[in-house]
Image (tube, rainbow, N blue to C red; front, side, top):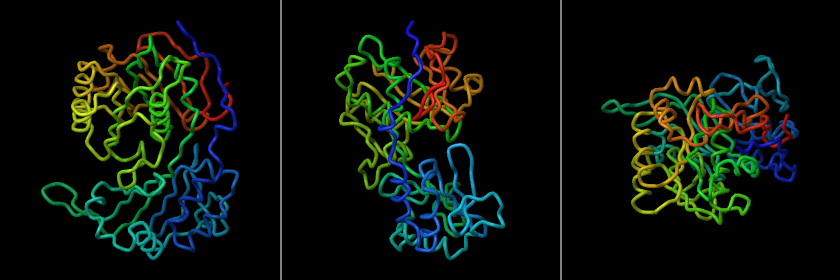
Length: 346
């Protein structure tokens, strides 16, 4: 059985520090943009989210922790030293991301987020107006969460040889706690198999991608902002079930990819994918295998042998740390040592 030895990514594969940071600042009003522009350059690339809440401190989530921001852009831990977000700041931000017409985005606001140019996303909460038990509009916005789109090309390369057998991509599930890089790794695997690589005997396969929350490809106005490869057919904004069946009918994929499965409906849909002779790649929320099998839907798909490769992530050494790769929940470990994303292995 193949064991993957330690692997280090070349520094040239790392995303240029601050490029995405500068890109997302364009959505902020001048006063906030000036503060955020002073955020230390050496840790800009560690920023995952910028969170703003009315009458609360400006917060930035990094790979392993969160910090508040002072008026001079310094990371601080004390609320008394941090910039407090005013209602006027939130109002200006909403005008910026909606081009001055928030109500024109009523249909999109029901999802609780908007996708921005560059693949960035902004989530929001406030007063929800409901009709027949469903949210129809969100107004009086009190919190905004800017999620910074990141592509870390090369992070999937060391694991790719383990995901193939005799020229076939193996049915793969990535399990991960929140903010541990599962979507980033998912996107990179999709990109690599779509382009192809002679190292694992593939000239590139057709991928059908269901991106329910516009998070994997970061589509803006129907156009992917993040690279998912030349042989990937994207269905953006569709539910997993409807999207997967549409792709099976219409696009003849070799691989179906989607994010965050776990419900009984998801498991039944994945079974139909397998019965159609198509492989799958998906993610699921769980900190480890033990936690995953406590969820009835995941337990069935793990115990019935549907998953041929099980990847477990953490943020122990940074978001996207690959802790384990197994051929199944009861199979031997294929990974010799944890892989630190974008750096050297231990």
